[in-house]
Length: 137
Image (cartoon, rainbow, N blue to C red; front, top):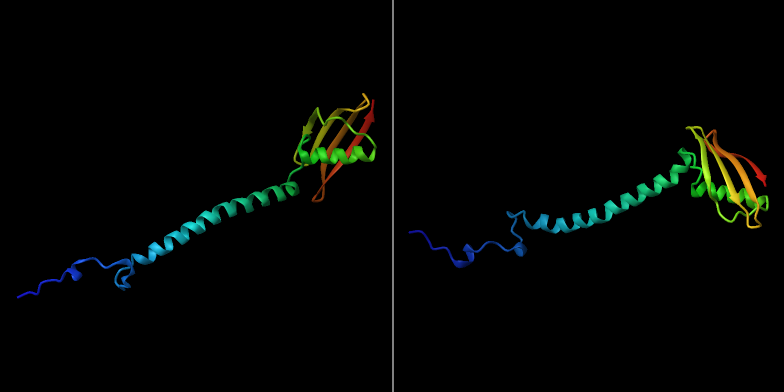
């Protein structure tokens, strides 16, 4: 006659029972860890990629005429000439190619005059340089 199963045998093993035949507890413990790793890794990879792009962008592309980089360069040039425009606009792109960007700016001065700047960004080897002409009117 078959023996009756006791109530303990009929219940499923608990996850903490340490049963070697039940692989389900291991993935449950790894799932939060892998999810946490993804939650950290994805934004971290995005941040590193963004920093690399913006950090290396200036090494491979000439600046736009009205970019912050171009305006800082113009500001440095005009400061050396003791000219301080009240604003850095309008700035126009005259021409653009892979090797040169030519720009023109007519900037108002705080004393009522204007300064006309013709400038070009160009590559010299792997270095971006600027060539400029400044006229005060």
